[in-house]
Structures are given as structure tokens and as C-alpha cells.
Length: 164
Image 1 (tube, rainbow, N blue to C red):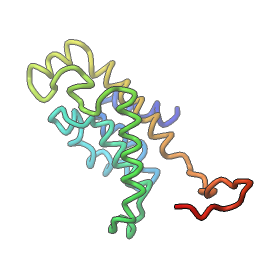
Image 2: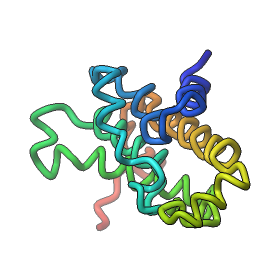
Image 3: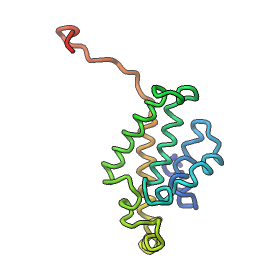
Image 4: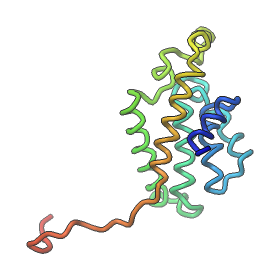
């Protein structure tokens, strides 16, 4: 079973979307599995307010772990790689799904009793949320691939330019 499938399984067996992502991918970067689940517990259902999708917030936490080391995270420059990765991830997810907000992605506001009943009645947690966890995990797999060294600007036949 690959990590995308593990995230889906974790979600289907009772974890919220944010836990599914951080619980599977966090340990790659030294996060204890139990701590990952505890840390991500409050981010499901768009932070319980139907705001930013929990699968995204789980992925964002993983990107922070992957792109920052301890001391680097304490400076703006050290956080830049994580910030850039989060922006790119959010753009890719939004391009696929049209929104980052749980209420938009599900078509109902699960932070209200009525919206939660609607989601349950439509089976959205078993269908749409599984799809969102899967897509977030797939995008995360892509984002976590080793980055090749920057080869620099392409060479030109006329040699280097002093313009700019």
C-alpha cells in the first residue's frame, strides 16, 4: 500500500482529513505518529469552521516539516522554501477543485448542524472528502519529490548577457 492509499485508509478508519495527511507523511520528517494525529486533530472540517480544507492544512504542515530545518524555520529566509511550497500546493489544489474552502468544496457548511446533516445525508464524507484527501496526498507526493539542483540559466550561443 502506498502513502496515498494509507492516507485514504486513515481517513476512512476515523481520522479527520488533516490527520490523514500529517499522520502518514509527518513521520517521514521525524514527527512521532501519535503526535502527528494529536497535532492535526483540530484542523478537520476546515478547522471546524468549514474554512480551509483540512486535507490542505495537513499537507501544509507536512510541507513545513519537509522544507524547513530547525534553525532555518526561525528566519524569513529559512521559511521561504516552505512558504513557496505552500503557495504552489494551494494553487494546484485550487486549480483542480475551484476552491480551498471546505464549505465550497462540499457545497454545504459542515460547521452548522444543518450543513453537517446535509453532508451526512449526501455521503460527502465517504465520497467527496475521500477524493479531496486522495488529491491532496497525490499533490503532496509530487511536492515532496527531490528537487533537482538548479542548473542556472540556459546557455545561449551568443554568450552571457549583461542586460538587466
